[in-house]
Amino acid sequence: MSEWHRVCGTDEIDEEDVIQFNHGDKVYAVYNTEKGFFATDGICTHEHQELADGIVIGTVIECPLHQGRFEITDGCALSAPVCIDLKTYPVKVENNNVFIEL
Amino acid sequence: MSDYQATNAASSGVVVDKKHIKQLSRRSDKPGLIWLAQWLGFLLATSYLIHSSQNTVWLIPAMFLHGIFLTVPAYSLSHECAHGTAFKNRTINEVLFWISSFIYFEEPYHRRYAHTRHHTYTWINGKDAQMPFETPMDFKGWLLEVSGLGLFFYELKVFFENATGRFSDITREHTPESELPKLQRGAIIFLSAYATLIALAIAGYKWPLLYLIIPRILGGPVMLLFTLIQHVEMQENQVNILNSTRSFTTNWLARFLYMNMNNHVEHHLYPMVPFHQLPQLNESIKDQLYEPDPGFFRTNLEVLSVVIRRSLGKSTKAATIRQDPSMINS
Ligand code: FES
Image 1 (spheres, each protein chain N blue to C red):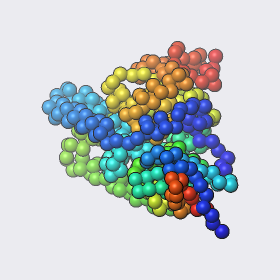
Image 2 (cartoon, rainbow over the protein chains, first blue to last red; image 1 turned 180 degrees about the vertical axis):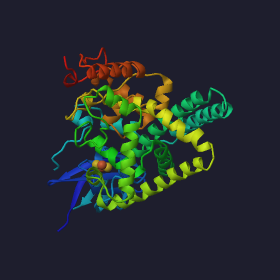
Image 3 (tube, rainbow over the protein chains, first blue to last red; image 1 turned 90 degrees about the vertical axis):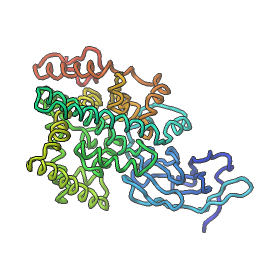
């Protein structure tokens, strides 16, 4: 049964940036992009690297370790060395707060 | 949770404000395009030197000079594009990645995957896929490396393995199964293109030999002197980049040819920072780093002196450059 969880205030993620959200023993990445807020798994599918340390370029997240790239909106792996897509999660904004559905 | 620690800033105890690193990592096309225009300008000038020195004794020096300006930047650009940091525009990045890797002599997919291992396991024996020579290095090893023969035969073997689908264990380790067909296709395309160049030369066309093949061979040793001092004589099999990797000071021309990779420690700590921001990154963290070694020529001369003395059974202590104690025999 999935539930909505508050991640942060909308002003706590800079434009074109990403923060990490930990819940249970899982790590998520929550993004503020030109197309709105999005969420994906927080660990790269190539090796064990937290994506929140990466950079957001438009709606692409680039992993800081080997610069693999994912499309944030659908989790699609865009370029080597990543080739496995990221799981994405629904996000909503209410009263200037960002929520993720897990 | 994985059982390894990637070799980078976190494993080396280097700390910088995250926002600052992200700021330095911002992508832009302008610095890369300016660099590219300068490179093409140098290549035009050195090509003209070759053209006007044909049938004179100056032909070989002209091809050597052209070879330096062809080969060192091709290596640097291929490396920067493998990281995807050279340009913001991904198409420009990838097109130049293929062209520069062709000159460098490595198939792009293999280059990118092998390089990921070099960053995850920097200078860790058996895991780093880009430890190209035996260590500690002796004079024979130095000759094999700097002549370019070591790299040539290694890459040729990888080309044929990948083109025929007989991938080595290390290639299978760093490349996902689903990506292997891309390596194979890339290797076939590159081998076909190299064969075409050689066929043209045999058929009597002079330009492949004059402007590409011979200059690439002659410029190779200069490129390899740059790459040699990235890690040689440094500490192996541990995760601290400050101990495994060397930065060195150098002049503007070498920094241009090498795309600022003389800041090699800084690059390994934060590989997502583009070449044009490495001097800035150095400014931000220099109080956490060792002093860079003193110059391209001096560092290389000291390395050469060490490897000769190692072959002669004499003391291998370098005069001034950084050297791991395990490399010093007395
Ligand atoms: S760990 Fe993310 S690209 Fe390698």
